Image 1 (tube, one colour):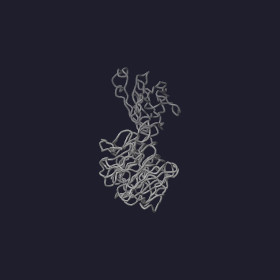
Image 2 (image 1 turned 60 degrees about the vertical axis):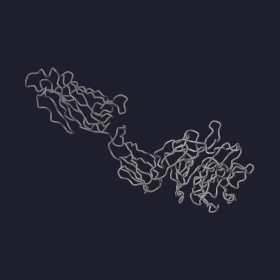
Image 3 (image 1 turned 180 degrees about the vertical axis):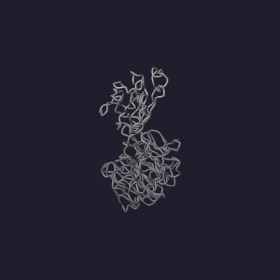
Image 4 (image 1 turned 120 degrees about the vertical axis):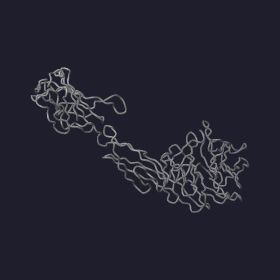
Length: 500
């Protein structure tokens, strides 16, 4: 704490030998030696040099006053007034300190004290809410003395911490920075680095850079003083996804990076062609409801109709699936009352129902998913009620029905011999199920019965990506363990497709 004295004009006019024009003093944490006997002016006797915001200083601010003749000035009023500083974030200014009588519980920006028999006046100081320099103007109006006492105001102890991202995803082998800012109880920034604790071995940390090590879900805890915050991270495999949103189809990396909209409103259910440069999607009719004709799009959003001549029997194509060789596109063709499994050449010609298929009255059969070799196709069959659904497999070579009566919905054929599907029962969602293409070895992959229609396999068949209704996010599910990893950024996205 420093005190600088500016004597009045009357004081400067005193005779030679008077040292009023040079009067000055400075105080630290203890008493300061008073001026030489007989020297007129204003002297700080005690003060505290620095403390934190809002602190009531342990030492009072004590000044000693001597009149123009160097005598102790008893019974003289002394005025103390704190400067003001801009409020953090705008919105006016605040006092840099507040003042009160010694031992007071109430404080004001301005205080007056009267010197005692020793010529001393004292005030209690409470530092203001803004770090920096607090200035207290000290004046003795009857004698024309003035000066400024300065204190260093430090931020308070950590009381709050903003951290980010609170929940994110990182691809194995990639990194991202942890962001943080620590604040005191008055919301002033505190320059302190929190300590970080990592739960689990899915990530490594170098300083505040986090790197994905192995797929999984991890929590990181940050602490500064008594403040503790936690953040979560999903470590995910590499991959590129398409997914439908409310305003179109989006393409993005598995960690959410590079997200961009490829098609506009009214698009859903995307599926990649094997070249990874085109995809097919279903369209929505808008206000009239239902689906329209499916389209093929490139990655710049240029589209064409999937089927060149759908004919009068098909008014919509739904859940289109390109074959693994890209020669055919399979889809559910709806005529207004029921759906049937169709296929069409990739150029939109050669429309036909799948070989051997015969439509049945009051039976809805759709969502065809071809085998990697193209010699078989899986689809669902729905009859006898909206929720009585089973999985069927038919040969595209002989037309023979190879598998039937496996309870399930919306089959998705892997790159091998496994078919994934949902066991929705009487609900709108269900657990992910797996079976061999022969219909044997049916097993439940996930305990949670929350997955909605629309899932896809990773190119190596180690993962399935789908939409989990309970968290309203996409998840990647480990096929070996059934462990699900949420994609935190994916709110509002559904029916995902994994790029080949």
